[in-house]
Image 1 (cartoon, rainbow, N blue to C red):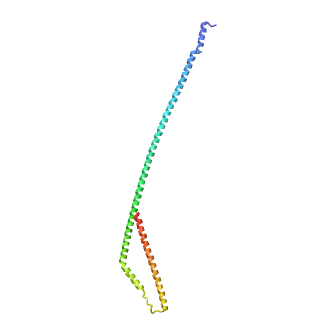
Image 2 (spheres, rainbow, N blue to C red):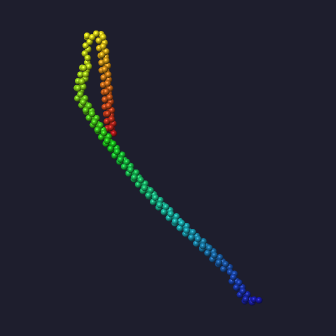
Length: 207
């Protein structure tokens, strides 16, 4: 049989192994505090990570913006260079065209001047020839007409001879008409050639 003192000591030893309500609440509070602290730490860690990602995103955006600005600058410079080259090529073409036109104009003027001088010389020579030959041509015509003028000595001819004479005169008249027609056609051709040459000179002088 245990004494009272022994029972008290025995119960005291047993009570050590059974926590009090206060101890249980304290442990629970500590656990809650630990969990809360873990949540807070996780929140701030997540917040820090988000901020780092946001900073990285801003840096990427800024870098991309700088790259686009640089690309636009390079593109603008290249476009300016191309525009400058096109303008330079255009000026060179215009200069070459102007030089070509000037050379062509000079050649035309030279040809026109040469043709004009040749034509003037030709006209002067023709005029001098015509002037110098006017009397000669007239004299030649007179001689030709005098040679062709036939004296009609028909008083002694009989009827048969008169018919032959009339036929001879008729043939001679036909020959004269044919020669006259040939001379008129030759004169027309000469006038046409002179007119054509004058028109060509006038057209060249307008260029």
